[in-house]
Length: 288
Image 1: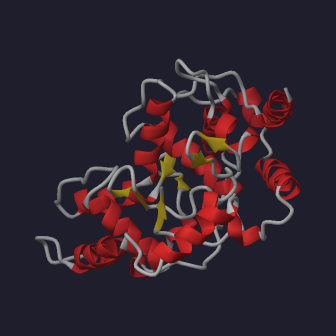
Image 2: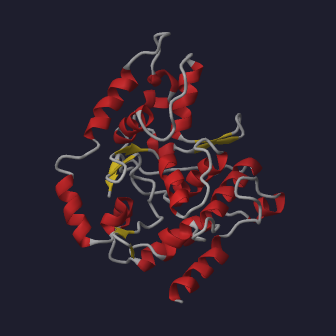
């Protein structure tokens, strides 16, 4: 009953317009949107629920919530399981395309130390661009085929780019553009909308039940939940991007996942990343 009460309050506080999860918010919803107020309320909630967790430690997900898991994780980090991806990612990042250019030619600061600025709303494209999409836009602009958005080379390249940004603080912008506000609202709505046979929303696990156990797992808090991506997950046995995790989560609640390149997933990432503003980049990471 207590969890239901908390979730109901949060849904009332954060819920967006009643648009479809994949559609744009209505003009009336955009007029009500106040990302800064959402951010303040969102982070205040987690600080009050977990007063003993140092603010920056939220980026470590379940390891900030459970002492036993924390001790095991610290031992594992002596030989991080994502090290292979860093080496592979740096090699791929530095390898020239067929036209002689590299990824560095596509990004600000040559792609180094920029993870904290993604995703962002691109006014020319009229949509949210996350880091995997930016990598593929770079590839296609240079005559190369796009990569799988969930794993493989994409996870390695973005892991390397995240590693060069460690410690830099997320600074996601939601410009005063109706399209950007609509994308933010759409992501917020997706986060709080129940779906699937289990009738769970993202918030069911990562807000109302954060820090609690779901079978053998400790549920990570939504605040800072994307800061450690890409991640190596033991149950995957490999690296995966944020999009891989979104697809996996939807499958776990027995919903039909969206395609990895669906705008709704990028909008969800936009909302959650904005909710992590001020926290440090911690990727790549590892999870059970």
